Image (cartoon, rainbow, N blue to C red):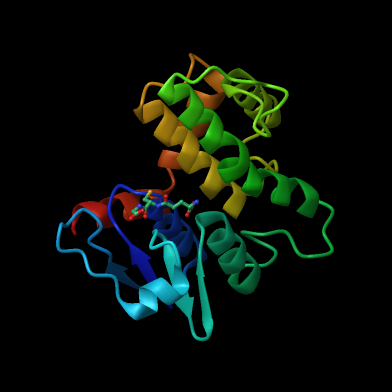
Length: 198
Ligand SMILES: N[C@@H](CCC(=O)N[C@@H](CS)C(=O)NCC(=O)O)C(=O)O
């Protein structure tokens, strides 16, 4: 398996996920900040928009971090990082895994840019609704699905840590404690240290 990645980008969540999955993979740096950037054909085949992360696994070529998270969890860690296909927890799992790119990220971007939200028209509601929904989802839970850590926590947890880094997390005990729990996972720490060593 090969992961196309760049440090301090959404690819850190893919590295975290692959470490949690315990699969063998290599990383290939996409030097996206270089003026001499040259994207290989293989990378563009996996990521038509030229964005990281992207994954090649045999004949499978894909990008979009949520899609990669789903693929790896289902293919290699069904029953642990992903509930099995016939498990009722699957509904919540899919909901939260999509919540990161479909709700958290656009709501964050809107808030960051100071754009006036339109809670009804926007599929992501607004920043406050996004945070309140997340807080409710995590109330009295260790992870989004309860006791079981899943790929949904990699997607949502990395976004929560990112929001805290950018001072966008309101003083929510629930979300701050969740961010701490995510950061305490050895595989997240491995992903962060791999970023620094490149
Ligand atoms: N929706 C995509 C977003 C990917 C994305 O925006 N990647 C950025 C880095 S965080 C990127 O590759 N930017 C470089 C470019 O667009 O050339 C995902 O979740 O994977």
